[in-house]
Image (cartoon, rainbow, N blue to C red; front, side, top):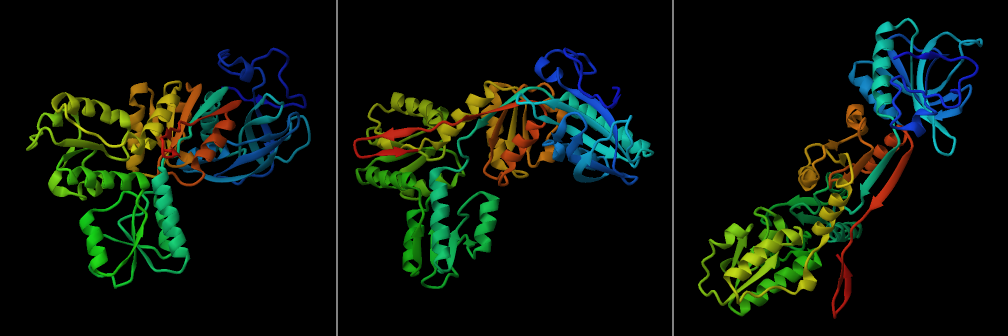
Length: 448
């Protein structure tokens, strides 16, 4: 790929394409894209200055939102990278000869210039080659693009409520202990630790009067009784929908029913629901599990759906239960939790219309793996992005539409940083897609 030596006139002639390959699949971008090399301010040997912006002799200021991604790749190649505004000097005008600047720029729809640029020492041939290769790869990823944001929040309303209750209590000066994690967001958990909130998995060593937070997923009836017997102050942050499920277990048990809990083994919410009446509850995870049920009285059987799973996953299990036990009774449908359904629907909505899924997340996040599974029906590649350094130009090259969502572990602002980088790789449109279920009952109108 040849780099044009920039003269005083730098705009392409009307109708000229700026792409080395001559591709016309993105005419709007290629019509204004140019690839140039300039002289610039001094750059030390062995180092690279990635432009945060470029003062261009013809286009004015070129903004470089994708600079962090370009710089991260060069740093992985072993180059010393720093970021700074650069000034481009045309070859036919007097200029300092301390730096060799490579730049690719294009015009946005409103006429503003954007692009990528980096400078090296003019005699540092290894660095020039590395920068040239990186610039070629990122230029190939430039195109007009859409980002579809699955904007339904990863944390459910109950989890957010529990976090607020814990913070408010800790902020009031009371010593607070969480029974198990109050949140599975590592950043929020770290903030709680800094605010003095500790976590325990048993109540044995807590002095009388200690405030104990029961998290959103709730706890067993036996644990509540133990906390009361020890004289602990219970701070109940149980999600209202989880509390409603606990109440239903008590109601079903009182009338002599076996309660079938449809859910996932190992989930904290399931443990709390089963723990309301261990002797008269049973967990099923699939329609196949229904065939193994042997209730003492087939006429006395009820079911519940665990909070935290999509209602749609429970539907075939409920059908299997009804087919085998015609007298089956269920919960009040107004107490179903729809957050997981909404999130799955939002992911499906964006992945079904996209070429690539990016998931903003912390390293090793189980929730990110869950989102990858949600996206599998769309048949598109998915990548977990822990920072903009993970963005890959080769993945983005063919992605005209990118789906973007966040896992519970995503660092604050990471999704916005990803969008910012993409905004420097061609004209960008961002579309927010959010799915929210409203539950309307005779008692009240609530939002799941």
